[in-house]
Length: 168
Image (tube, rainbow, N blue to C red):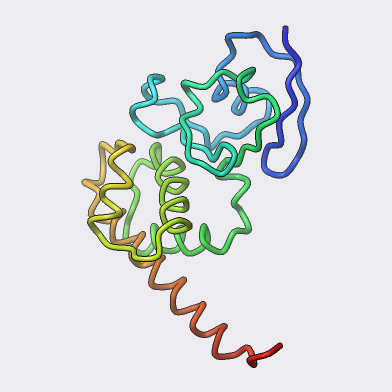
């Protein structure tokens, strides 16, 4: 057994783990992060996507011991995030999900894309989602949902900037 310390969704966690325990299994079984889904267990489908030290990562191909000292954010950790709120509203209104199995990984990927890119285009969104597999939707609703979230965030920041007096 190896002792690891991780910061998961802003909370420090220390635990003993087997050297071969996958990070996805640790997050689901020990932490209760049920948004981390296991699909292919080969890092291909994207259902297990998390933020590892601020970057998207596949938790099904990372060993928990390799992540000692890391900061991990799962979908649960983005509960009060304004970008995630806009994405969830977009996914709801644009029918960006069906069975929902891929949705947590899609949301994490979309959140990362919106956070890093200033110019959001349907082509760029499709490229970002090339690392996530959805067998139900055909991606059209997902792309519309992310575009809607980007528009919402842009209009909200414009409103906030107009409402905030300059110099304060």
